[in-house]
Length: 152
Image (tube, rainbow, N blue to C red; front, side, top):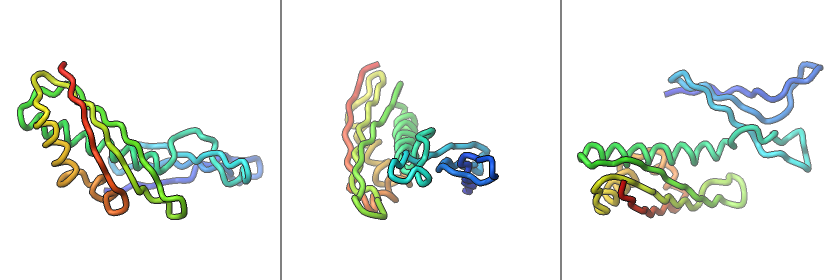
């Protein structure tokens, strides 16, 4: 797996760049734009809030990784899963490096005749065995999960 991240910034007349916009080009041929938050104290160091922050993309990727696992595990178990979303809330360390210290994942899974035990098992399998992102972040963050099951 590979990815190239280029600083896009905002070009100025003198040829230099400012801003904190970055464009990632993934090995699978996709692009992802990231930006920083505005910095009122030092505008030259801040972003323009044009795209997600890099750490937001880490959190989003983690949610995508675990939701993918949950859906795949349920489908492989021949469960009639119809929908899956996961809301992630997090806390970060106050000082650099501002790693994630707590992440809570709340899953909403819908399906026809889905058993709560099957959903609980799929989430646990993702959390404990399959989701690379969750397992990596679990080295610095306490990760908790919850779920609700909706009949579709």
